[in-house]
Length: 112
Length: 112
DNA sequence: TCTATATATTCGACCATCCGAATACATGAT
DNA sequence: ATCATGTATTCGGATGGTCGAATATATAGA
Image 1 (cartoon, each protein chain N blue to C red):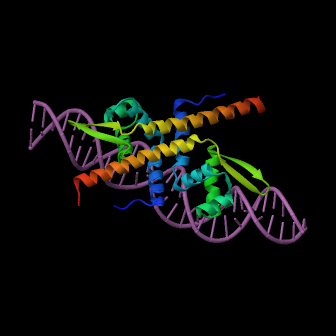
Image 2 (cartoon, rainbow over the protein chains, first blue to last red):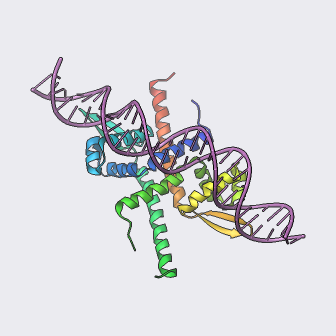
């Protein structure tokens, strides 16, 4: 059982993050956090073409970020681990604080 | 003061994540979490060419993930927000659990 | 088997990012 | 002004990701 070396762990880590670092995939992940859905329902609620959603779901599936379950002709996708959302929320907090700080700074310094 | 619309927030969110989703930048962020450093010290300790480190730092700086402070001829980089590390750790936990689960699965099913 | 619905894939074009190598720029000291 | 050190940028090529459009595959039912 080959233990991945430090550099390979680093690569896997980056691959996992890269799978999350796409606007549409972020929307998909949040949508699945709200409720598990099949591809068509996702495409409808997010206003994206079905093939686009399917391709993004493949990326998430390959990284084990979502799980699948057949239900007749359709496939229900679910979030595999809620900590993904926690990580995304952390990043969003960082972003919001940075934006707020920048706007405070603008108001104080450059007050037009 | 134009409030970013939902789709623009989503884009900013993704840009922030994308800046983090690179193997070498992950190493740089962890190194800076351990201790603030200048470019050369980072390049030395991570065994990367100095121009490479500098280019990656520019990306992180553009996303306000790191801060800079001149000290004479050198520039000390520091982590801007430790929640970045928390988010990275969360993703690493998700990855480790997935890896462990997959290896359990292999041992049980395919036990070669 | 034939149809309808749901999901997945392929193709080509386009765009972004990464790297190594070389070089430019900035700062402090002599 | 010149030099040494630290930092940043540019160039070219290679790589990889994304999309729309069209198409292929799978499942359930008649």
